[in-house]
Length: 116
Length: 114
Image (cartoon, rainbow over the protein chains, first blue to last red):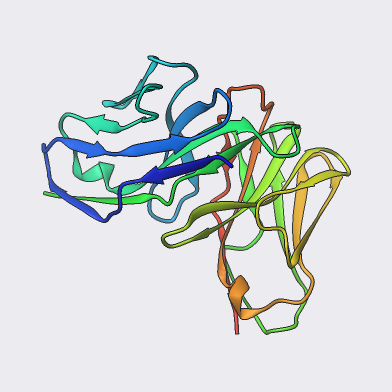
């Protein structure tokens, strides 16, 4: 079945440091790929997405490129801020085993802490 | 603003109790989901519903059931709660699942089963 593997956390960075969170996936079809973010005490919210190979999703200074050849969707940001501290989830969307509605498969999440 | 509301933020129940977790969305979304979130395991899909009275099992449906009598409300039921069901439960909804999967999540219910 489909799966998503994220780099293990927690990740601790100083403000203005460069961020990379690795994400690789396994899927039988042609999935769409997503990054969701969960701030403390809140539900998840969509950060960015890419729906086909070589697409780049971007939002709030974060970027990720859909790499079909390496089955990866790594999240990057050039200069993190304290307010970026959160848990980040990589996810893919593909047809479920029932063949009906597409379902999201999530990675295990990566906790990011940014220190001032 | 779009809203997914879960009825309780924290819940403490005893083993064997029947537990109801309620979720309401105000966006007229067809699709609703229940996930559980556990450290190191990420989110795992329990059940989802793509229409009123319709439901499908997710990856870990054992020990759970769901009810969707109205479009806006999706309930998760633990028929006989057990300690291994202690977890954070997240409800989500989306308009369609044709590829633009911007799910809207509630803020979660932390359930403790003693």
